Amino acid sequence: MVIGVDASRAFVKDPAGPEYYSLNLIKNLAKIDKHNRYILYLRPGQKANFRLPHNFEAKIINFPFLWTQIGLAAETLLKPPAVIFVPAHTLPLLTRIFRPRLPIVVTIHGLEGKYLPQSGNLLAHIYRNWSIGWAVKFAHRLIAVSEDTQKDILKTYQIDAKKIQVIHEGVDEGQFSKTTGQNIHYRFKTFILFVGTIQPRKNLIRLIKAFSMLPQKDLGLVIAGKLGWLYGKILESPKRFGVEDRVVFLGRVSDSELPGLYKKAKVFVIPSLTEGFGLPILEAQAAGVPVVASKKGALPEVAGKGALFVNPKSVKSIRSGLMRAFVPKVRQDLIRKGKENLGRFSWKKTAYNTLNFLEKLKAGP
Image 1: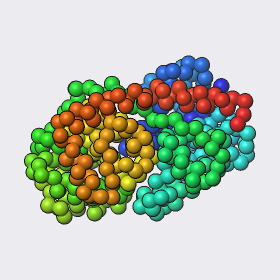
Image 2: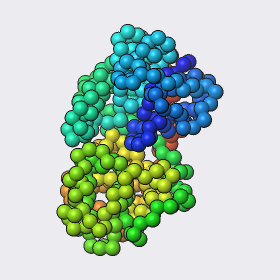
Image 3: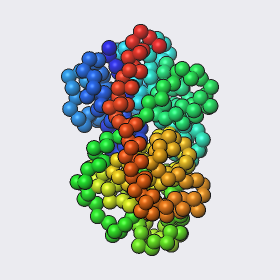
Image 4: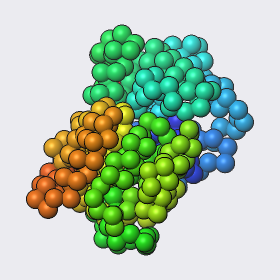
């Protein structure tokens, strides 16, 4: 079977959640599947950053704009694979219209933009909601990365539940349990860590306010992640709350440096208003760091028993969770339960489940 994969999100300079998912899933499909043939559709200037096995082909589609809706659509109409897999939201609509029996599978990572209008600039927000809506309506099958995302899809779009399969993301436990690679040095001996894009949904203003209320005045807060959108007030918050000398915005941290950053942290916190999955939780658990997490979205589903859960809209609750995570007995319990929780997740498991799902469409959707 020939599986065509929109790999355009897998090989980008500044990856976020869907991009990490795309890359790790493709890497692990390459490891486990030597039988099917794969065509990885790429944008101009992109190339695979790992050695492809003999049954994988990288195909550059030279189209400068509307790449998915014209370039990818034309390629899959003229040279159709047996199945098209889109790891992040946006399907080629013309392919669906003119080849209605060609199975298309799309992964939905969350409906944050639907419920939180501040999830991106206006045009990006409109396009994201449009692309997810059309994917849900026209894809033959959907993959939801969490049960929470599946629930949101069913509530919002009223589609047949049989159309959706929940397949969790994974984590490379070995990568984040390494003790090497700790090359980033800070002026803080002890710090709390947040990893994620700087945007309103991540709830960083409340986090910074809660941090300013902690009794430990030698404690730092390290915020690692690229600038997203509507971040002005977030960047101003440390000064507003009188902790500008104890809060550091690192920007995006490289994949080689990130495990060491987790290892050095005393506590990891993710206070998001919602998340479709929450991969940094698993990375922190793999690194042996106690986790404080929002109780909203898919975060409780992902963290299992290996986190302290807080109300993300309550500064007092976030502060309380952070304080408890420094209690030695609580810390030990969180680390142990976090390690146990990792048994539910691996990229190899994600790849096997995804492959089984795709192969079921051999005979048509």
